Image 1 (cartoon, rainbow, N blue to C red):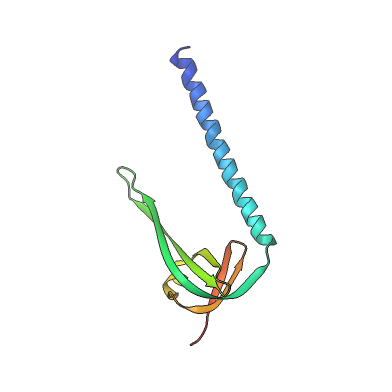
Image 2 (image 1 turned 90 degrees about the horizontal axis):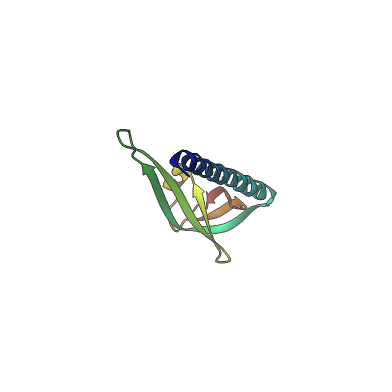
Length: 118
């Protein structure tokens, strides 16, 4: 076999793998979304345990760099069970470790945190 035969086969295999990964990712997201929709909406007394951020980005050559910041908060309910959710930057800035209140969530979907007035 020469390069004119091997290269198109290789490109086809790589393209098929990329399409497969994309389809798998889409299906997984739909399954998670449907699962969350079937879960009850729960509200439980909780405490803000910790907060964290994750920054991701890239800087392609000769282009403007792009970064994204993702905000997470871990809550501990009255039974001692911990739940970590991705939250908005605005909520991240308003929550303080140690805050007490009511956490509302549905499956793995964060619905809100109502802080107790002290």
